[in-house]
Length: 176
Image (cartoon, rainbow, N blue to C red; front, side):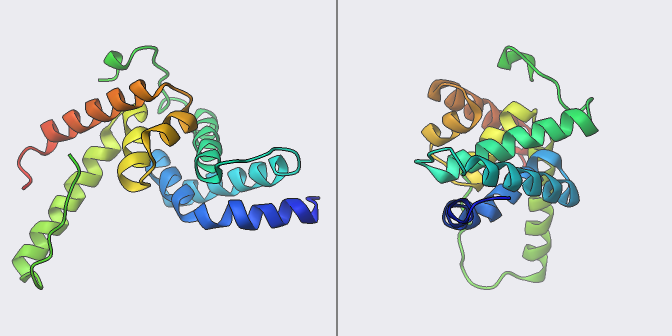
């Protein structure tokens, strides 16, 4: 059973970042129900760790736990989906929305189709690229926070983001 101090630290350090934790798990698992399971397991792990672990930066700390729990879960439940790689070459621009009034029904339909293409293209990225892209573009983490969360140098994060964006540009060249 967690101590009162751990529960208080959990409320202060983990609860504010649950939406981001779920979003990351959702992108990595590709499934809402699986993401909920992963985040629940990650929260249990975080609560246990808060008994003894000093946490200076809760957001990347929690996302690290979620990432690790996701890969543990995927390895156990979908082993063919997780393909460890040693070199990124083996895995083979920010988006801006400008509001200029209410879209026409045709524009709304086109925008929805574009969003679906983007989601599909992101989901098709190899895990090493998808996790970096989601952490940066969706969760808004800094390069340093991503590097800390996934345990690689900042330069590797930058390289993975560049490769992920290049793949997306190649896949989505017609959107604009």
